[in-house]
Length: 144
Image (cartoon, rainbow, N blue to C red):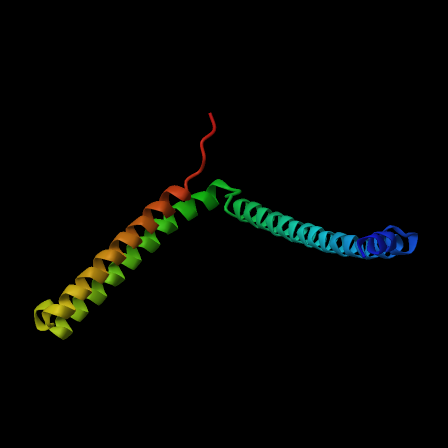
């Protein structure tokens, strides 16, 4: 029985069939590998394009922030503190108006007062960090 099976498997016809089957399996695996490689190359090209676009956007933003004239720079430097002052004044007006209308924090329940206090503190910290970062980020870089 084993001799007959060995004879059949050793014959050129069986070898061709087995070779063909393994050849098909090999081509199938090669096709999968090519698809994966092509997908990788496509994603790499997309990522490269996205990075290039982000770089161009960053460079454009950097160029748009440059002040060409000294007068423009002076106006820009003067307007920022003015806007900040106006915003602070508006916050003060709103706060004092709300205090007068509602009767202050004493008129609120303790739970609401604690939640309001927490929210205000978190907002002040966030806004302070934003303002400090904005002021220092808007400074020019000195080259020595």
